[in-house]
Length: 211
Image 1: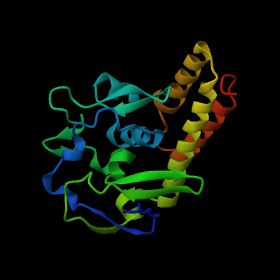
Image 2: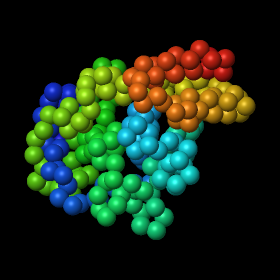
Image 3: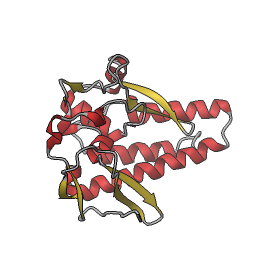
Image 4: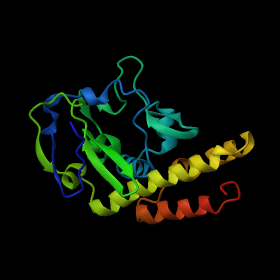
């Protein structure tokens, strides 16, 4: 079957009706739930927990993605469940990370931008109903968040290109600067997230070890 791709205003059969108590997608995910700057901003703003505290509590850890060091949610070694899962429910559901928020939708990036596709067999709920993609994501304004996700994707690939020909010392400096600017340096919750993100991206692009 040919893969179907969806835009923000399209209807897709993704609404699982509050999961009906199921938490299968919150378990045994390894290091696949990467956290982006918006995720950290939301967790810090609404949960009062910084990136450093997430690491200290063992809820998050760093992993390597194609040579770039990125944070991810960490599954508990005893249960295999996400550290935010309590009694079968997500304790940060209203401000959960973007990858969790979009599931069972995946993101497709190409030269035309970003679209979404349904992970047909990833969710065991077979009685899902149709919902508009933007409503399912639940971030307003949806267009601005969509633009950020695409910009973050492109920016990470710029970093990968910079790392490709970097020696060991420059690779280490660039990774550490990337982590510091986007994850370890707290965001100002009273200020617009997007302005902070694009400002930090501009600063890193203009740094000596990026070019």
